[in-house]
Length: 258
Image (cartoon, rainbow, N blue to C red; front, top):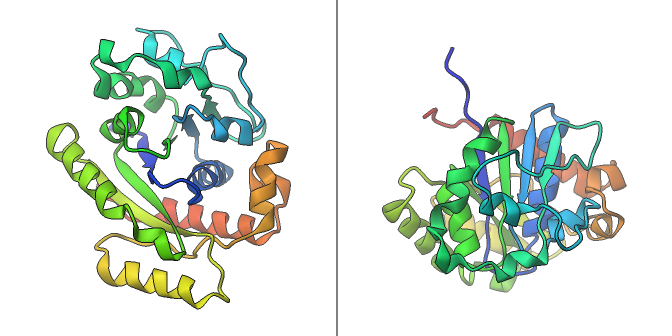
């Protein structure tokens, strides 16, 4: 039987505050809770995914940056949740000062990705809130993209630019890159505009949209400050239920085999 390749997903939206890191962390942990081996790459110099899982690196510690710089060797993975098949490749603020111009920059992560794909079933990449070189590295190395969209008026601003970037990456570097789906976040069922945003996206977007929308939930906001994913912070809250359903829908979604 041919060896199964890990499925690599970049979680991307250049707009800040849309629930991107919340989705990357909680979706990846929930997929691991289902029994699948998962690596989450914190690809953001702000390192919010790392701190949200209780991992805070000191200066000089091996991190995502050192993984990109090294020619070989094992990736500096940590296992923040002992009982789950879940590993984090943590980030540090030093990532922001890396001199990309000295390297074959857009392929750095793609060249190193086989070391990660050989260790798990899924790789998730939490991208920074920009369309710069770090996000390009994620897109070049990924099989697919998940786009979190906030259920508010300005939600669709910048979406066309993101989709254009994805098209350019497909044309220039990664012809098999796809959009796996859109995840609606910060949904308030009492807000008519939130329902309207979802209807508009579904009407005009050719891409898969995941159900259910992720609700506005205070437990989702509180969990990172305790260094925990929401399913460990409050397993029965609305946020935990929503991300578990999202993980199940993600894993069960039919995909063509390459």
